[in-house]
Length: 142
Length: 72
View 1 (cartoon, each protein chain N blue to C red):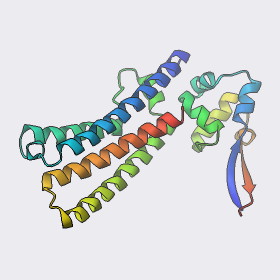
View 2 (cartoon, rainbow over the protein chains, first blue to last red):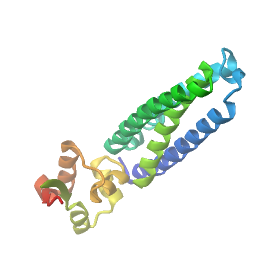
View 3 (cartoon, rainbow over the protein chains, first blue to last red):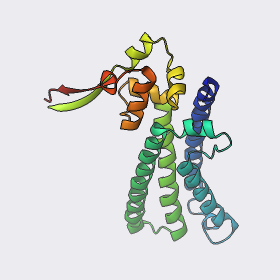
View 4 (tube, rainbow over the protein chains, first blue to last red):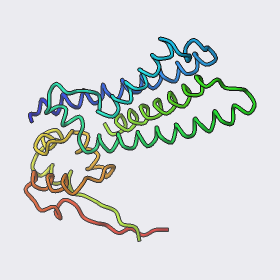
């Protein structure tokens, strides 16, 4: 472990937080602008691409950004604090998912919500909150 | 009575003329972790507390202590 590794990990950690905040914003924007357009949530390439995107971000959040090339920097990036932040972000995402599901359930009483859109709201909302929470925690602790 | 973990990490680090990054390098954690421990934002595990103490050449009790504060 060198000083250079510590500084590099610092920069990469900030970049990771910024990237996750951006991803959260993109996910939420997608949920909003694609709402009511069945071609984005139905079976097909567009619908499947959403699932792939959610799966990809879940994987990135779970493994801390996929920085695996340099094991020393990877160790610094995924240290105790970062793992705790990740656990808190995943918990926030879980509760956001439950809140989104309740929101869809209540909304459906007045306005029928198609299943595809409902799944998008729940999965997109949960993932966006998890990513935003992680980014906020990492950014605040600079 | 509420208990709070306080630490003398900043003080001990300054005495040894170490930067946060230098201590982070010795311990094998990010600079951010050192910063959050110093500010009391992050409570480290026993393992990290022992590593920090060892890097500073003191006992863990010299770095961390349990304070009791009055609850209203």
